Image 1 (tube, one colour):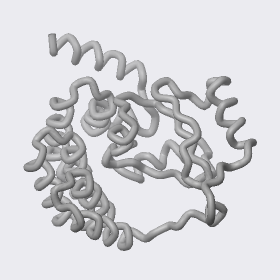
Image 2 (spheres, helix red, strand yellow):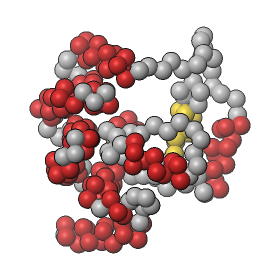
Image 3 (cartoon, one colour):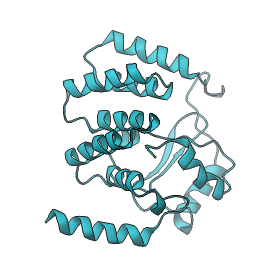
Length: 216
């Protein structure tokens, strides 16, 4: 989960020597889907797209218990979901994903989740003007949508508008002050030297104390 996108996240996967495909959640949609506001978390999704393991908070592959849980799943047989379950999961292009999101939204134009999904797909496809319009429409429908503000932040970051991105991120955090994911995204944009190429946990601890003292 990184609002700044693939390039900054790639440094961590490369340094870890990861050989598997890695997905980046720029819009932070996972926290809405699974209801968490902290990281790191662990999820295991099998070949059929079935979620078979979830640990919210404190997941660490270097922790023996966490690693063993994943190793057991890797060694076990995949789940089966009925006819056609053995077929390879269908992948789609960005253009196809946008088209599908448009079709879904047109079936229910008042559905906020569908509008946000459409906006996120358009942002991924670099259709920034349309994506921004959709996120702004979502905010009119629900002014307290942190997801819409996060989406706007990703657009501003791509366009090099750092201050606007920070403004959107801080508005999102004001709506959800206990959300550590948003809080750390703000830090990463304001203080990239403390996150890239390596995360400075000592600095984070000091920053928490400083910010919490200022909020009292």
